Length: 115
Image (cartoon, rainbow, N blue to C red):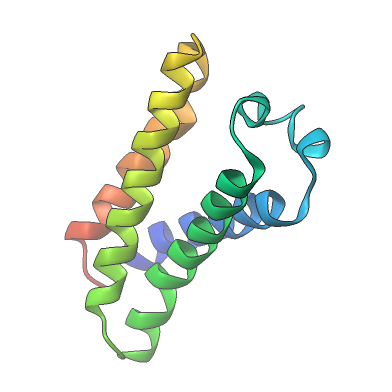
């Protein structure tokens, strides 16, 4: 079960984080309207943290090196989604927080499930 959840999260966050790191504000805006109100260095930082989180839930358990880092990465991904929910609610975008909640629940599950 761990590997299925971790794999799904890793794929999502590698994609989303990669977009935030490489695309301009104009390219991101149609999918992520919130980038208009957040400075791009913050958007880039979020993207980098998402990629680190994706790698963190996969590599430590896979290699057996510092497996506690997977728990730390999952906690970080939960924090990212809490921040995302706060941003969406503050912008009146409560209809779009379903994905944030789903990602939060999946990441939270990884805190308690072991490979």
